[in-house]
Image (cartoon, rainbow, N blue to C red):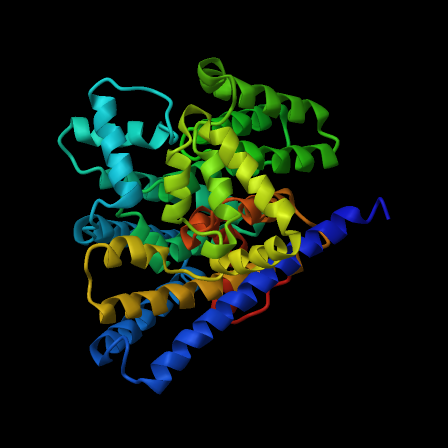
Length: 443
């Protein structure tokens, strides 16, 4: 049994991803059912025609990437990425509300000399401060990091399968609607997703001390963008220890700590956010289904300087007082967290006052592409179950870890946004095979 546990752990992770894919497919089915019963509403005939045209163009581009000479394939993929991200940069005009307003305010505080640790990680506001200082829009940060993801996706896709899969990964990332829309808003997910991809890239050539050290440094740096990176570090360590790469694991840990030294010195801990307790309190609130809610925020605000400890205590009390109810809540949260792909529409279109028809069309397109990505990722994951390459291990491990975090923490669909590019890396080989319409000797 001890020799078989890696296999069963890997298959378990693939099975969980399969359940997510099923949930996303059912969500898509529900949307299609509404469309069929109310045709041509709620999207409207014009938007449906637009979706069909864009879908045909997207499919043609995918076939081109899968079949044309590799140089042309990569050119098409990168061109599509530039086009979609420029469109998001130019046309997406979200209202500065909620989180976006907070990041904008923090970035302007950085320009005024306010630094460096507060209720939110300051890495993203510091990045926003750069274009602000130059008189440029902050959305440029999302654009730059989205483009920077292209070589990372290509390297990872090539490492999992081949160069063709790398090009397909870039193309899918380019045309995924929610990812494209989200790059045009002032949120951390686009930047953090690229940071996670960068932390995986050092392992494309295998486990070595130097590559492990670079990965630890990059993962530690990403903690300043989103305060969940330290919870992902065990995934990397387990993958290295499983291969008995003890020195690599040590180098990874050492550089991770080096990257976290500023926050350790400043706060005595490794969290770059001081509202983790609030997230746990909201995540255990059965009345709100674990979502953000104003009653918990109002209660938290009354507790003064000791509010974080009291929030954690309240979260523990809620779980302990009704463990069965919490278990049922965890299932509902997992559905909301993983199966709905409307965060890009919400932040880029709903807050900006786009019409209901436009929102419905964008939501349908987002859900459709996301469902395909998940199904293809499951197919590739299953095909790789015997070899279980390191990158597949890491991607599935990050997926399971993020899911475990949000069993307890507050949940929203956008909290899976930074994992979707990792799914794309797994999905690309299966999609490339399908688009080529032939069965190569190996994946």
